[in-house]
Length: 400
Image (cartoon, rainbow, N blue to C red; front, side):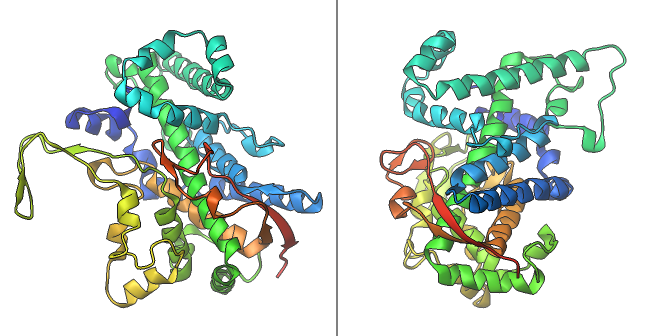
């Protein structure tokens, strides 16, 4: 994806492309989505309860990916893909991300291969890589949506919608956007980037956090007790703003972000016109400088016993006046910080609160090896797997 915002190298060009979408992901804009987010979270809870009633396992990684895909698709182009309604949670967005990550090293060192792949017939690629079916399904969906939006915005008398009717594709295809920025290949790549990033990253964090919650029931108990103070009943209504005030829930979310290792590849930054001082060293202008979040999040000097899932470390840091959050670089930092950070947070708060408050579960054939990062393909992956997976058996649906 060479024409999306995230791969745009020039600072000013990146700022322009990001500016087209910034307003959609502000905290205020995301807060207005809360009813829709809750609708999807509650539907996920219904599916989990259905699994309990039918004595079936819950593939919670797939459930979470369906939630995030349904939300980001609804917000992006006004129509949910409804993966939560599929029996097996079949998820083309997730398949697209898996194919892209599997090819990441090839495209990094042989960028010309991207052009080769684009001209290979779809049927051939699907034979070589079965997951490419989802890849092409998603690409064609986004391409068709982009073409339809371009057609709409070019009709005589078109007026760009405002308020809740305006979506991301309206912004990308707006008549005020230069025609060069509205070429179909660019629009397709931008749409793919938004949809894929808005699906797997948050779903992965939810999967890792859920593993730790149900692996160590003492952590789950503490979270549940805190939630009962603001959610007397498992289905009590609660807002994002209220959940943000809960210290232990904040700790659970921060630890889930820290240990999910969503993106462990190097993300270089370049100061084009100025030297950078690092201790006694001077880094010349134009030198790529990068760091891997994995090393920061597992640094024992910052996070003692770094592999331990310890929500209380964040509470202790706050009590000491330490700002531990500055070392949480899951969303990166600076001008290229993750565009969808606020959307991720509202999903994390509501989904964790719902899981902890409503369900007693036991993990099934799911161990630390299912989430342990063994290799880097953009995201950190476990050994022998292309995704982080998790299965559980619901023992009880809570009523009090």
